[in-house]
Every structure is written in structure tokens, then in C-alpha cells.
Image (cartoon, rainbow, N blue to C red; front, side, top):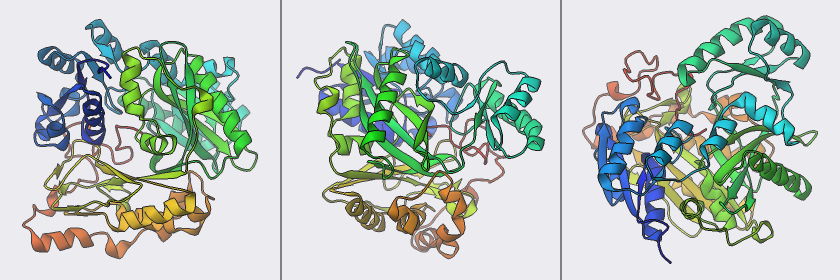
Length: 502
């Protein structure tokens, strides 16, 4: 098979950059990485066939700098650009700049990105496409109109940023007296994070399940879904464990949600890989459109494991104009897959990110076990970027076997030198409600006392310190964020420190 194109620039870092580089190698594409000064020795730099430095550690001057990324593409003769997730992945201006430079954009049309990136506009589009949306308000952003709409919707409700996601610019309002302050604080945060202070309102569903559907479309009019991913195990509105199939869905609901996903993507002329996210009321089994992520997701590997389709390779092949060789009826769910996100973070301190060096590393192996890693032994985990260390993925014949395999794999995983969430993940998966599949998006925050091992949080770091000369504890993240100069740093705002995928 001829490669889709001879060379591709990966406009990202960490595990997703490594993942894309490996897909390129399998397709015979020359991969070109980019890196900041802080990432000069990073794993993704050495995984790529070639790498170019694009600026200092601050993301705004490197991974978020469109001009420098395009200059790197021109310098290396790249023919295409893959944005990964996070950073510029859902930036329609970046997509247009790539296309204007005569390069292939590995992603959806910029118009589709804009349509789905605007939460107010997306809600209106979904209503037109007969896709259920959460009861809410996306009209004129006026304080008086927002108050009237809130009274009509009822409490609790969500105040949400219209121009962004990932939990930023979002507030839960339980009573009318809280609304004014919530609007003001959400607007400030939205303006700071997205340069857009517009807000919308949505009914808050406290016991909802968060379930998303993977979609894939080519440039020849073929658009299909690759079933669902259950994403309800979250902390700070960020996913930490995902699984497929969802333990909540039956065949009927799965079919209905799959059809709604394709309808949603079709409404904006979608091509390439994307994800349509829903909230599901487990008691009534009603589902509502939440948003669409117009890029590859962190949790895409569990879909790959269950469906047997390499999503990243198909992103590249679709961008090159290839036609999907399979139809909806050909896509099957085989077995059960679970993904755990391993972070350098302290669950006992509100999941604050941690910095340090990976002194010793042990990763699990075996049939049905996959690790998508962004760091290796000796890697420095700094304060400038999201502290995702790796994604641990397992696949087994059924859910019970997958849970057992994941627990065993987590026990084999060790990152000496860093505080991680590995123990937390083990306790989370061992909880009876998780074992039974009876959990919702508030499960983690409602059960933190049971899930946090206060006396074990620093055991690995202390053990490593006894063996290796470490840097002082001052290299750990400053919780108040005041000493972090880069506003895009994950440490810059302790309440919303993720800038990547949600």
C-alpha cells in the first residue's frame, strides 16, 4: 500500500504525538515532530523521524503558536499536519492556515469545527437536526434574559461558556440567589480562557451518565459511528476512566444514540474522526446532545480495541482522500475495553498536578494490555503542560474480565519519583458501584473519602528519594499558581488546570 502522503508534521506533544508517529511509521509516512525548549529530550521528539524546535516552554510561544508551527512545516517539507488533541486541535483558524499554506489538514472542515465549537450555535443546529438537546437557553446573552430563562428552566442549572469547553467557564447554580455571581465568574473565566465571554444555560442533570459516540466520515459521503464510550468516571469534570461498551446501554438505546450521533455529524458536513457527546438520564433513559469534539479523543484506544479499527491511521487515510471500505453494518463490538489515565497528580490534594523526574518505571505487558505512554524512565515532568504520563488500556472477553485485567495491570505499573493517581484508580475500580456499573458523573466527588489513601500518597516518592538524589520538594506544583509565569500552564489555575482533552 502506498503511503497517504510522504510526510506529516505532528503539531502536538506527549503520548498523542508518539501515537501519531507510530501510525505514520506503519503507513510509511515520514513523521516530523515539534518541540519546545522544555521538551528537547522528550519521548515524542525521539519517536518522530525528524523534530524541529518551535520556541520556549510557554505553550503560547510554541505549541499554540500557529506561525512557528507552519514555519516548521515549511522548513521540513511536510505535506500534511495532524493536530492531535488539545492545543490547536479544535482551532478553526489553525486549520484554515494549514490549508492556505497548501498542506493537508488531518481533521474535519474548518466550517464544521466552527459550527460545533460554538455551544450556542451547536445547540440550535442540533435542534434543527432533531437531535435531543438538554433543556436550556442559547439566545441573546443579556443578564435580564438569562435570569428569565433560568427561572423557566428551573434549578439546578449550568451556566456554560458558549465558545469553549473542558469545564472552563462553567458553574452549577442550585438556587436563584446564586445566579448573578455564577454568571459573572463564568463570564470572566470564559473570556480569559477562550477570548469569548458569551454564556448559555442548560438544565443540570446531577445523576447523569456521560456517554459519547465515535464517528468517522470520509470525503465521499460515507459517515458512520463506531459505537459508544462510557466516560462518567470523572474528576473536576475531566475523564479519568473510560470503558466500552457502556454498562448502561441496551441494544435499543445504543441504536438510537448511534443514529443521533451520525445525524449530528451530518448536520455540519463532518469528515474525519470526531466524537458526539451525550448526557443520559439513567432513570428515564432519555439522552441529550452535550457537545461534539472535532478531533481525536484521548480515549480513542478503547474503540480501537473493541472494533478492530485503527482510528489514527484512518484519520490520515481519509485526509488523503481514501474511501472507507466498510459500512455501518460491518462495525461490531468485540469484547470489552477499559482505559485508565495515569497522571502525575495528588488525589489527596484536589488532584493538583505534580512535577518531578521518572526515576524508575515499570509498565505492564501481556495479551490484551496496551500502554500509550508520553514519558519514559528519566523523563522530566515539568510545570508547563498537562501531566498525563500514560494511558493504560486493557481488552478482554467481557466486562468482569476486563476489570480484573485492569486491576492486575495497575498493580504492575510504577512511576518512582512522582506522586501519581495509580492507587486512586485501583480503589476507584474496586468500588462495588463501579464493579456493578452503577455510577454517574458525580461519583468520584461524592466518594472521595473512600477513594483517597492519605497515608500512601507519597510512599513512592519517598522510596525513590531514599535511592536517588532528587530535586527538592519545591519542584512540586505551587497550588496557588502565583509563581507560574505562563497563563497556559496547567498549574496557572488550580481550579481548571487542564488545557488539553476533556
